[in-house]
Length: 337
Ligand code: AHG
Ligand code: MN
Ligand code: MN
Ligand code: MN
Picture 1 (cartoon, helix red, strand yellow):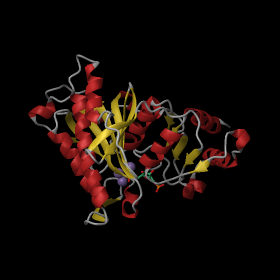
Picture 2 (tube, rainbow, N blue to C red):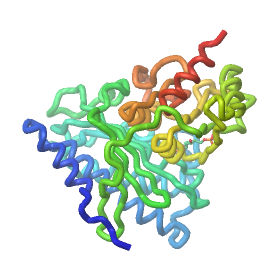
Picture 3 (tube, helix red, strand yellow):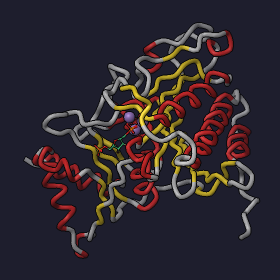
Picture 4 (cartoon, protein in one colour):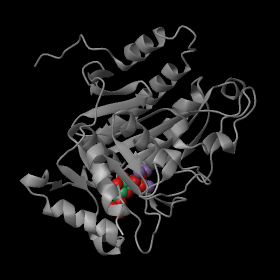
């Protein structure tokens, strides 16, 4: 099979973007290159899973109260490592770490950005060979350059993101990232070991045929959410359906499918967990940024995800995200008396 070698690599693409801004420092390009490198390392390990001792539990419980998997630890260390060794990042926050980490050396203290990430999304799917991912979110720090970064740098609302993206380790490995200028997708070309621009300028279709939700929790959802889900199941040709239910259990994979094909993903609050499960800073904000730049929408059922002022690093939020037309319809259900 011929591989198209005329397409831009991730590095070529970010440099091309940089050239349009003569005053840009190149720190964001460098940061994306670092993230791309960590993604390739994690990808190699994911592909070997089952052959080497990388499956299963690490034997600890994280700050979220979840059993940590070996790949969670591996991915966390690699993403943190490349960002620490790079020149663009002053510190990080991670789903897997109790607190944010200040790199605190001369170069890092002069860096422009902080990064928040979910190193391995869909941990529960690792052992059964189902798509998993990594999600990241980039903010310009608000603290003074030259000094170590501080908590306020990490607790900025999602609308202040400079860039956000995810990697999906799926049937092929892709890196998708957004800046305010657009969303672009890069597929890892194994023959050259580079992410190559395969999905330029991704636009989320206004409507789609997919709805993604954990049906097992149905009776723990609010009545309005249940009515909406019921409505999804009753869609006929005349009302824009029938919808197909798809729920992978790796948010990255569900959001990615809906971004490309059109659809809606929901992780609502439940009776026992009113804020749901997903983390605002590592999961909801970056995905909301990407989907909004692509023309979609994301809310917590009451307000826009990107306008929430975070108060804690690990705070959770209900999440509804996807195609704009479908999100508008959902809102009618949520606002109904
Ligand atoms: P993580 O593996 O990073 O902890 O995230 C898992 C999340 C998300 O990827 C997925 O959509 C959701 O958990 C699935 O949760 P349920 O099994 O409760 O549906
Ligand atoms: Mn987890
Ligand atoms: Mn996750
Ligand atoms: Mn995770």
